Length: 388
Ligand SMILES: Cc1cc2nc3c(=O)[nH]c(=O)nc-3n(C[C@H](O)[C@H](O)[C@H](O)COP(=O)(O)OP(=O)(O)OC[C@H]3O[C@@H](n4cnc5c(N)ncnc54)[C@H](O)[C@@H]3O)c2cc1C
Image (cartoon, rainbow, N blue to C red; front, side, top):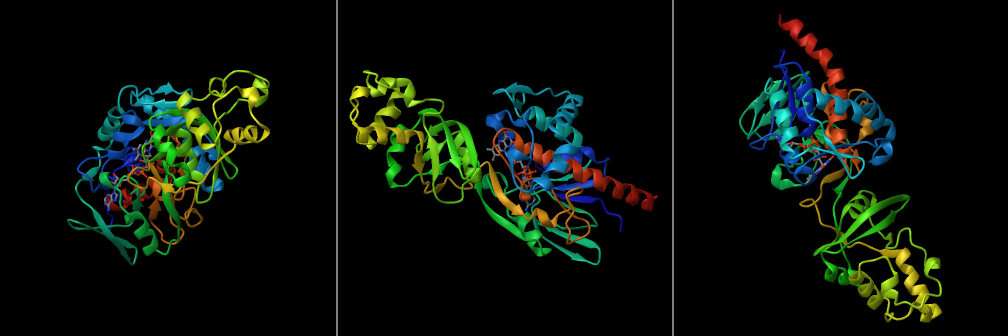
């Protein structure tokens, strides 16, 4: 039986793999009515494709597993590949590569490239089984057979655009273990002590958040539901439970204002509304800085190491990614093939590899697809030779 490769999912990783594979060598099974739905809404509609600063330090996951993919298909290789497709991303925020006008620039490339493959839309994969060396992929419409099955079904975030647990279910069916999954790159809800944050909704300020050994610098946005903004989203990648330390005054030293007679609120480099809200919480009257008592000064200094214990996160409906997933110890890092099952591959977010904000998750989706392609293309040659 020389059936084409079956790819479950029509998102970022699947589309890169289908674009690299020779024509009519794979079938994409996608539950949505269109391909690349997440790419379309990503990066505020402009898709943050990759980042000039690339390396395993920007990922949560096993460094030894991640690095061969990033080396095989680096951000530079990706940019070259895109350039060949006439897409030259623009650099924003110093290191982040985005589509110039809209994510559709990238989606259109994938639509054009994947035309050469068979695409089945509105077709949801329900289960997979294997007899002898053949996978039976049961969908909402029919059952497909193949010797090579690529699971590219992503994570659990954004269920409204097609996310499902099918990839994890398939992994478990074939004896894989799953690393605990949780919403990541997501905002935090707050406990009673920080309910006053909600009154600051819409205000943003630069902070450094420390979660364990990880530091996340950038903007923190006070939101209606709690805390959001780039620094917070990155912090959510590392947070499991317990508290986070927030420096609300990064780069600022109280020494620089020692002895000042000015009002505290005019000295602190924070939006006025934020300073006033914190002063109220810290039970400090907004007065001349040099008239602070020792005790008040100590309380004010806590703004440099503010302890924040999130109540939880905004959940999968708002999370950009799912951290955790298929245990990478059970997947061959040079091919993405399962150690348990010959012909079964996992690529993209379904694996226990999660990047920080800034284009790292698309880079992982594309790099893991590339290394899988390098390994699987030999098999296609075999299939074709057997056919002829
Ligand atoms: C709002 C938002 C913004 C983001 N912005 C960025 C960004 O700017 N930069 C960045 O690097 N990352 C970003 N991400 C993360 C990025 O989109 C993902 O990490 C990436 O798409 C993962 O690629 P993937 O191929 O593994 O999964 P996906 O792209 O999620 O693709 C999986 C596909 O599988 C399909 N599927 C699921 N279950 C089934 C089933 N049972 N049968 C058939 N098909 C199924 C889904 O419909 C989906 O199309 C963002 C995510 C979100 C939600």
